[in-house]
Length: 186
Image 1 (tube, rainbow, N blue to C red):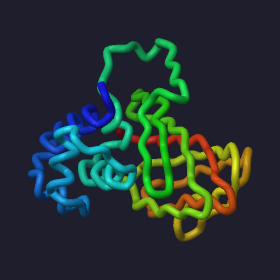
Image 2: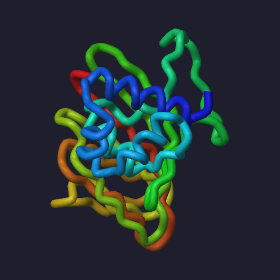
Image 3: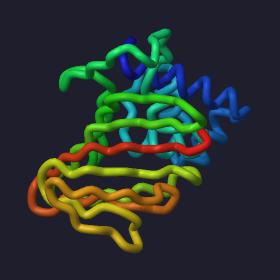
């Protein structure tokens, strides 16, 4: 199923589960009611920023909105080619969901991350007990809690609390990294 249809179905399901109206969900996420209606109908491509806002309001991991539930076994091999997967673009950051695993009260989401040169993105706090782990592959990336970000280069790694506002900023060149989001108690 195409991404816009999957996102639409998952948004509707999460909103119904929370018992929120279209208007209230849109208001809390800071988006227009028409935008949310179009997203839920699968007629509008979501941006990364919009889906993060909605995931926060609906108290679901971002990856939950991007993937149709499958009947596949956790033991099966998973291969995601560069041209496949759930791509989501934002003004500063592009992500591709590579994998999502739920086990033992935790959920892991693995993303390919691309941050455009000179761009800075401040991500609002996720729900409590979300840990972000990031390994930089190329470029120089300023990342971590907005109050105390770190400057990382290729091969550098950081783990931080995603439950606080945090920043992603590529300095002179585009930066690429692998991001693992760990939801404890998911």
